[in-house]
Image 1 (cartoon, chains in turn yellow, blue):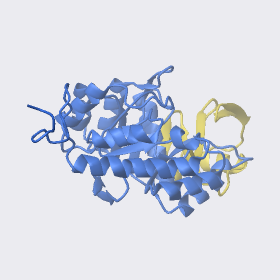
Image 2: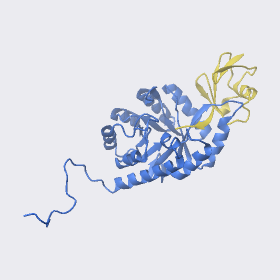
Image 3: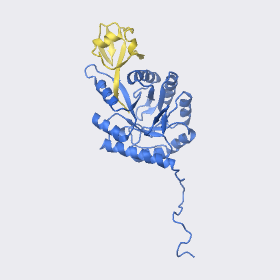
Image 4: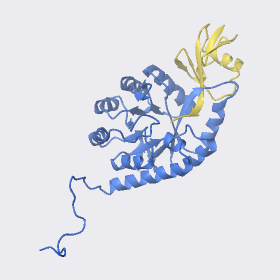
Length: 65
Length: 257
């Protein structure tokens, strides 16, 4: 299926968020996530299913004012 | 001492972490400023570059309290989701709440801001709302659960100082007990001194330091200006008057009468 990750379409075979993050190369990274505009806590990623067309945000600390 | 949501701070200067020439300059500027609070943000992370990972380790080594922002959010919903994400990754319930309403001025959308503040305060966040000097909005934000307000001096990054002195003085007078931090728009140290002289509790500076010719010296200069402005406020400024008032005693003046 195709999911939109940080604004770019990606192919994934992973049925849930934690697996998709690992597949996309985020393993071990300090990131925080949202699916379709809703925050998904780190502890909830494994039980968060993904569907074709889902919008996933993967954010990390950055400089800010 | 400045107290924000129960946290006591010796420094009345909060510093942004963006737009410095290098991380090393940022670290030195933080040290020179004496700031104990540094603002940070969240951005999309690339799996390949992992830029955020290094930045987060770097910030933690500065041993400061972080104040995450919701910069770039244009709706209450986006800001609330971003605040949830920031709380998880930064491990703090402090949030500098920004809901931008207009692109040219980056003026806050005070309606979305109030809505998001109510939701977040209800969830236990300590909300630092980036707002205007509007008294009614300030009242609504306090009703929503905010215990600190961050009115703008001028549009973000504009360096224009305190644009609406009358409005800001009215805000200060209207809410004498609420910590008020001037956020955005200050350009030079005298702007910061003026804010503290007016009775504001602190200032948040980013661009004016980060983009200065020498950010470290500018950070030091802002720290001195903030300390001077605060000391001046405590010392009781005289009232301004329209006509001259001789400072040298006039009794016994020679050549008179």
